[in-house]
Image (cartoon, rainbow, N blue to C red; front, top):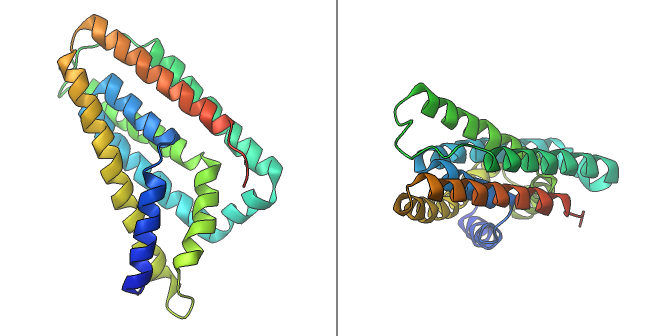
Length: 210
C-alpha cells in the first residue's frame, strides 16, 4: 500500500491540477446549463470511467506512445476536438425544453445515458489526460511496494477530488438555471452551453505536447 506521505503529496498536487478548468469542466458545466442537475451528475460517471480508462491506458504504455509520436497525439487531439465541437453545435440547436418536462420519462433516462457516453468519450479522447497520468502517477509510486494497489488508491483519490470540483460547478450552474426556467432563458442556456462545448473543442485543438 502507498505511504501516507506520498499519498498526501499526490492529493495536494492533484487538487492544484484539478482546480484549473479544462475541456471536461466546460463539458460538464454545459450539461448542467442545458439539461439540469440530474443529467450533469450522470455525466460525472462518464468522466470517472474515462479517467479510469485513461489511467489504465497510461499504465499500459499508451501515454508513452503519445509522448513519443506527434502523429498519434495530433490524431487523438483532433478527434476529441471535433467531437466536442459537434456536441456544441448540437446543443446550440437543441429545442428549449423546460426542466420538468421530461422528468421521470424514458427521454430523461436517454438523456442521462447520452451524457454518460459523451463525457466518457470526451474524457478519454483528451490526449493531455493520457500524457498527464503517464507523467504524473509514476512520481508518486513506490517501486519497492506492490504497484497495482498504489495505482488504484491514487486513481480513486484523483476521482474523488475531481468529482468534488465538478459537483461544485454543477450545483452553481443548475441553481442559476432553475431561476431562469422559461423557454427563452433555456434557449439562452442551451446556446451558452453549446458555446462552452465549442470552446472546449477549440481548447482541445490548441493543445501541444509538453
